[in-house]
Amino acid sequence: MARKIADEHGIEPDDAEGDLLVGFLEALPVTDPGTPRLAAHLKRVARSRAVASAASRVGREGGSLPAGQVPVTRSGGHVDLVLADSVARHFLTRAEAELIARTRIEGLELPSAAHSLGFLAGEGAAARMHAERKLREYFNRADR
Image (cartoon, rainbow, N blue to C red; front, side, top):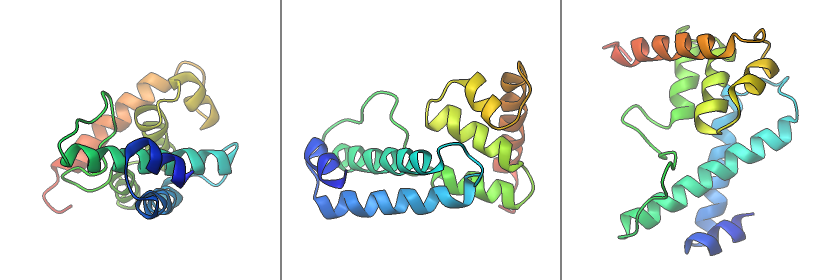
């Protein structure tokens, strides 16, 4: 997988391999161990992180980021780390953080992501909106 990402984005294979590992490690604290197809989920998150990082490297070297690309870092840190910290500080539940991650970062369909996390049918949109409001409160705290 690292070689393919490196070839597609014109980066060193070692960089792609490192980014895959970082993506995997970042996903661990915010992923529910009961997630269906856990290995595939972790692989998908790691690949997404590596691709975003590769695109970011290319962007810094004069290229442009693909439309809709998830940024590797934000002012508060990598999005997975921000979600993990918001769970650790009791702003979000694990399910809320995972709902945001699966639908906003990974691009999964809201109804299926919500169902797999135990939300009742039709609750997904309201649950995500509520979680995102709590996440904005977390961002606005001075002590984070």
